[in-house]
Image (tube, rainbow, N blue to C red; front, side, top):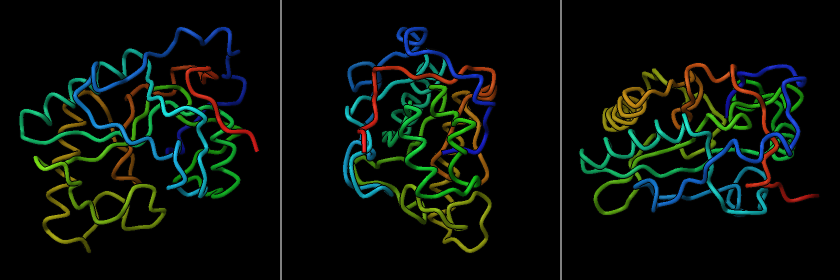
Length: 201
Protein backbone atom coordinates (compact mmCIF):
# COMPACT_ATOMS: atom_id res chain seq x y z
CA UNK A 1 0.00 0.00 0.00
CA UNK A 2 1.10 3.52 -0.51
CA UNK A 3 0.18 6.99 0.62
CA UNK A 4 0.90 8.56 -2.77
CA UNK A 5 -2.42 9.79 -4.09
CA UNK A 6 -4.31 12.12 -6.38
CA UNK A 7 -7.63 13.88 -5.74
CA UNK A 8 -10.79 11.84 -6.04
CA UNK A 9 -11.58 13.71 -9.27
CA UNK A 10 -8.94 11.51 -10.93
CA UNK A 11 -11.34 8.56 -10.79
CA UNK A 12 -12.57 7.25 -14.12
CA UNK A 13 -15.77 5.39 -14.78
CA UNK A 14 -15.78 1.58 -14.95
CA UNK A 15 -16.70 1.71 -18.64
CA UNK A 16 -13.65 3.85 -19.39
CA UNK A 17 -11.28 1.49 -17.62
CA UNK A 18 -12.36 -1.94 -18.91
CA UNK A 19 -9.36 -2.33 -21.23
CA UNK A 20 -6.77 -0.59 -19.08
CA UNK A 21 -5.43 -3.69 -17.30
CA UNK A 22 -3.96 -7.01 -18.31
CA UNK A 23 -4.12 -10.13 -16.18
CA UNK A 24 -0.91 -11.51 -14.66
CA UNK A 25 -0.74 -15.31 -14.55
CA UNK A 26 2.07 -17.88 -14.23
CA UNK A 27 1.62 -18.40 -17.98
CA UNK A 28 2.44 -14.75 -18.75
CA UNK A 29 4.93 -14.14 -15.94
CA UNK A 30 7.19 -16.62 -14.09
CA UNK A 31 5.80 -15.62 -10.68
CA UNK A 32 3.98 -17.24 -7.77
CA UNK A 33 0.63 -15.52 -7.19
CA UNK A 34 -0.74 -15.43 -3.65
CA UNK A 35 -3.42 -12.75 -3.57
CA UNK A 36 -3.93 -12.51 0.16
CA UNK A 37 -6.88 -10.15 -0.10
CA UNK A 38 -8.87 -12.87 -1.88
CA UNK A 39 -8.41 -15.02 1.27
CA UNK A 40 -9.19 -14.53 4.97
CA UNK A 41 -5.46 -14.21 5.73
CA UNK A 42 -5.17 -10.44 5.66
CA UNK A 43 -5.67 -7.41 7.87
CA UNK A 44 -9.45 -7.47 7.28
CA UNK A 45 -9.68 -11.08 8.50
CA UNK A 46 -11.92 -12.00 5.57
CA UNK A 47 -11.79 -12.11 1.77
CA UNK A 48 -11.93 -8.58 0.37
CA UNK A 49 -11.58 -9.44 -3.34
CA UNK A 50 -14.37 -11.38 -5.01
CA UNK A 51 -11.91 -12.76 -7.57
CA UNK A 52 -8.37 -14.05 -7.09
CA UNK A 53 -7.15 -12.28 -10.22
CA UNK A 54 -3.90 -10.38 -10.50
CA UNK A 55 -3.81 -7.46 -12.93
CA UNK A 56 -1.67 -4.44 -13.80
CA UNK A 57 -1.43 -1.77 -16.44
CA UNK A 58 0.73 -2.94 -19.35
CA UNK A 59 3.61 -0.66 -18.34
CA UNK A 60 3.76 -2.14 -14.84
CA UNK A 61 3.24 -5.66 -16.17
CA UNK A 62 6.29 -5.22 -18.41
CA UNK A 63 8.41 -4.14 -15.43
CA UNK A 64 7.12 -7.07 -13.39
CA UNK A 65 8.19 -9.46 -16.16
CA UNK A 66 11.69 -7.96 -16.14
CA UNK A 67 11.85 -8.38 -12.37
CA UNK A 68 10.56 -11.97 -12.50
CA UNK A 69 13.14 -12.95 -15.11
CA UNK A 70 15.94 -11.30 -13.13
CA UNK A 71 14.88 -13.16 -9.99
CA UNK A 72 14.75 -16.39 -11.96
CA UNK A 73 18.28 -15.89 -13.30
CA UNK A 74 19.50 -15.54 -9.72
CA UNK A 75 17.74 -18.74 -8.62
CA UNK A 76 14.73 -17.09 -7.00
CA UNK A 77 11.06 -16.56 -7.81
CA UNK A 78 8.86 -13.55 -7.17
CA UNK A 79 5.66 -14.01 -5.18
CA UNK A 80 2.93 -11.43 -5.78
CA UNK A 81 0.69 -10.54 -2.84
CA UNK A 82 -1.28 -7.72 -4.45
CA UNK A 83 -1.47 -5.72 -7.66
CA UNK A 84 -4.54 -3.83 -8.94
CA UNK A 85 -6.90 -2.99 -6.08
CA UNK A 86 -10.50 -1.84 -6.61
CA UNK A 87 -11.60 1.42 -4.95
CA UNK A 88 -14.07 -0.34 -2.64
CA UNK A 89 -11.26 -2.49 -1.25
CA UNK A 90 -9.22 0.63 -0.56
CA UNK A 91 -12.16 2.02 1.41
CA UNK A 92 -12.27 -1.16 3.51
CA UNK A 93 -8.55 -1.01 4.30
CA UNK A 94 -8.63 2.71 5.10
CA UNK A 95 -11.52 2.17 7.52
CA UNK A 96 -9.51 -0.54 9.29
CA UNK A 97 -6.19 1.31 9.38
CA UNK A 98 -6.40 5.05 8.62
CA UNK A 99 -2.63 5.51 8.75
CA UNK A 100 -1.28 7.20 5.60
CA UNK A 101 2.18 5.74 6.20
CA UNK A 102 0.78 2.38 5.14
CA UNK A 103 -2.62 2.89 3.53
CA UNK A 104 -3.65 5.67 1.17
CA UNK A 105 -6.73 7.66 2.13
CA UNK A 106 -9.59 6.04 0.21
CA UNK A 107 -10.90 9.50 -0.68
CA UNK A 108 -7.64 10.20 -2.51
CA UNK A 109 -6.82 6.78 -3.90
CA UNK A 110 -3.92 4.35 -3.96
CA UNK A 111 -1.37 3.64 -6.66
CA UNK A 112 -2.63 0.06 -6.48
CA UNK A 113 -5.96 1.43 -7.69
CA UNK A 114 -4.12 3.03 -10.59
CA UNK A 115 -2.89 -0.42 -11.58
CA UNK A 116 0.78 0.54 -11.33
CA UNK A 117 1.79 -0.86 -7.91
CA UNK A 118 2.63 -4.39 -6.84
CA UNK A 119 3.41 -6.05 -3.50
CA UNK A 120 6.02 -8.82 -3.72
CA UNK A 121 8.56 -10.98 -1.93
CA UNK A 122 11.14 -13.57 -3.01
CA UNK A 123 11.04 -17.36 -2.82
CA UNK A 124 14.13 -19.55 -2.75
CA UNK A 125 14.77 -22.55 -5.01
CA UNK A 126 12.65 -24.74 -2.71
CA UNK A 127 9.70 -22.34 -2.81
CA UNK A 128 10.20 -20.99 0.71
CA UNK A 129 9.80 -17.26 1.27
CA UNK A 130 12.98 -15.42 2.19
CA UNK A 131 13.08 -13.89 5.67
CA UNK A 132 12.29 -10.19 5.26
CA UNK A 133 12.10 -9.44 8.98
CA UNK A 134 8.31 -8.98 9.06
CA UNK A 135 5.36 -10.50 7.32
CA UNK A 136 3.52 -8.85 4.47
CA UNK A 137 1.32 -5.94 5.57
CA UNK A 138 3.02 -5.63 8.95
CA UNK A 139 2.11 -2.06 9.86
CA UNK A 140 5.17 -1.39 12.00
CA UNK A 141 8.51 0.39 11.92
CA UNK A 142 10.40 -2.84 11.22
CA UNK A 143 8.69 -2.95 7.81
CA UNK A 144 10.50 0.24 6.78
CA UNK A 145 13.58 0.26 4.59
CA UNK A 146 16.99 1.24 6.05
CA UNK A 147 16.49 -0.34 9.44
CA UNK A 148 19.54 -0.85 11.65
CA UNK A 149 17.86 -3.35 13.98
CA UNK A 150 17.47 -6.24 11.52
CA UNK A 151 19.73 -9.27 11.15
CA UNK A 152 22.30 -9.27 8.35
CA UNK A 153 20.43 -12.03 6.51
CA UNK A 154 17.23 -10.00 6.52
CA UNK A 155 19.11 -6.93 5.28
CA UNK A 156 20.62 -9.00 2.49
CA UNK A 157 17.24 -10.40 1.43
CA UNK A 158 15.62 -6.97 1.37
CA UNK A 159 18.52 -5.54 -0.63
CA UNK A 160 18.24 -8.39 -3.11
CA UNK A 161 14.52 -7.73 -3.65
CA UNK A 162 15.12 -3.99 -3.81
CA UNK A 163 17.84 -4.37 -6.45
CA UNK A 164 15.73 -6.66 -8.61
CA UNK A 165 12.71 -4.36 -8.51
CA UNK A 166 14.60 -1.09 -9.03
CA UNK A 167 16.58 -2.55 -11.92
CA UNK A 168 13.29 -3.62 -13.54
CA UNK A 169 11.99 -0.04 -13.48
CA UNK A 170 10.00 0.19 -10.26
CA UNK A 171 10.59 2.49 -7.30
CA UNK A 172 10.20 1.72 -3.61
CA UNK A 173 8.50 3.58 -0.78
CA UNK A 174 10.09 4.13 2.63
CA UNK A 175 7.59 2.35 4.85
CA UNK A 176 6.99 -1.04 3.17
CA UNK A 177 9.71 -3.44 2.02
CA UNK A 178 7.18 -5.32 -0.17
CA UNK A 179 5.69 -2.38 -2.11
CA UNK A 180 6.92 -1.25 -5.53
CA UNK A 181 5.36 1.07 -8.10
CA UNK A 182 6.11 2.87 -11.33
CA UNK A 183 8.13 6.08 -10.81
CA UNK A 184 5.41 8.18 -12.46
CA UNK A 185 2.51 6.45 -10.69
CA UNK A 186 0.52 9.60 -9.99
CA UNK A 187 0.31 10.42 -13.70
CA UNK A 188 -2.07 7.47 -14.15
CA UNK A 189 -5.78 7.79 -13.47
CA UNK A 190 -7.49 5.82 -10.73
CA UNK A 191 -9.44 2.85 -12.07
CA UNK A 192 -12.58 0.93 -11.22
CA UNK A 193 -11.95 -2.09 -13.42
CA UNK A 194 -14.28 -5.11 -13.25
CA UNK A 195 -11.35 -7.54 -13.63
CA UNK A 196 -11.25 -7.44 -9.80
CA UNK A 197 -14.15 -6.41 -7.57
CA UNK A 198 -14.45 -6.08 -3.82
CA UNK A 199 -16.73 -8.22 -1.71
CA UNK A 200 -19.61 -6.07 -0.53
CA UNK A 201 -20.22 -5.76 3.19
